[in-house]
Amino acid sequence: MSSLYRELIIDRYKAPLFKGKLDSPDIFFHDANPLCGDEVSVYVKLDENKNIKEAKFEGSGCAISQASIDLVLEDLQGANISEVLKLDKDYIMELLNIPLTPVRLKCALLGLKVLQAGILVYMKKQENDQE
Amino acid sequence: MKTQQEIINDFPILKVSVNGKRLVYLDNAATTQKPKQVIDAISNYYLEMNANVHRGVHYLSELASEEYEEAHRRVAKFINANGMEEIIFTRNTTESLNLLAYSLGLNELKKGDKVVVTRFEHHSNLVPWQQITRKVGAKLEFIEITDDGRLDMESAEKIIDDNTKIVSIVHMSNALGTILPVKEVSKLAKEHGAYMIADGAQSAPHMKIDVKDLGVDFFAFSGHKMLAPMGIGVLFGKQEILENIQPFLYGGDMIKLVTYDEAQWNHLPWKFEAGTPNVSGGIGLKVAVDYLEQVGFDTIHKIESDLTNYAYEKLSELPYIKIYGPEPKYRGAVISFAMEGIHPHDIATLLDEDGVAVRAGHHCAQPLMKLLNTDATTRASFYLYNTREDVDILIESLQKIYKLFS
Image: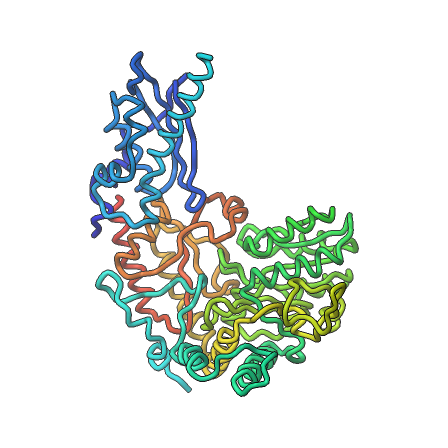
């Protein structure tokens, strides 16, 4: 019935591939969308070149928010964290390939924003450790 | 008497199509649609009457002033207040309740006093009291909710005591639809000498309000939830109390005499209406009230209780739907529900594809949602222009959504 809820989105919402926790991750961050209560936490382990070696998420909320982070983590395996920081809403629109209204775009963006916030915290900490 | 088809024909927006489907508007607890009588009255005000009120002596200003005052008188009659002096126009229920938090709460509460609200409150009857009690060192306490989603009167009897200075409760829950026994709680408040406030945002649109019968000192409601435009709300207050409490907003129109050092307040209700008011909104509200009374609350109740019972029954037949709140006889025309494994925002988005407008979220009652052990629900709310066919479309669409996710 819906182009917004194409099969891929519903499949990944019901059976996500990257749901779970990682012990002692290099990157961890959690945030929520206060309007709808969507929540996402991400766990990332990096290799020596700061590429994403392993990533997992936990969360609850609507199908768009949860499927989106699952697809993002799949797509960004091996990606360098500095590259991840450059990604914006166009990336998400292309990845999900569904028509999103401004309100629902916030749901779709939540996961990427959490990941990027986690990377920024990690980079800040690295900087401080070096000083 | 109008037939329901005639009522429906009065609402031009119901002819709008959404995603190629007929609009099925089931978000009436958020705001209602406006009949053409109200739209015409607003338009007519700007076409033929617009001027600032209470100052000019020219023709238009006098006309606008008279119409604006007449709107106060009309609303007074609508809720059985003694007169225009007891009717303050505000922007909405939230502003009415803030007015009370400041004018009554800030000035009348002392350290150790108690303000009592309920677990049902909309943020607008919770957050202002949180702020004011904190400021003056008063306590904020809550009347509990029963397991089946009604007000726990035993808890009310325990909590309302001689230290209680203000009791402020919602008349009908926007999140669950529960109708609260305001009259009984008023009696308790009066026994202990407390001021009694009712938040009527959800009740005034659907039932005959008689402030004397309810026994309240204050009653707040919004125009936009009862066919009037947005930006006009009402605070009823007993004249003898309004005479004795401080204004909320200061400035133009609320004064009688001003020197560089001090000011005297204008007579009621203008003491509480600082600045240029929403005149067209007031006139729109008057026409909305006329419309509601012309249809009659008996008729409105008949339409709504039929729809609520019907929807409750149909939703109960779906095993994957969980309905929140009490059985239909304790509730107004609101049904909040959850669907197994599907988030309310997904439900609302998919319903929208079928032209069905509902609300999904926490309904400005986050603590209540937490108490119910959920983040959010989907809410369908009805009004006088809704039909059983609207409910059928809702149910069919919900069945399709469940199938899509399973």
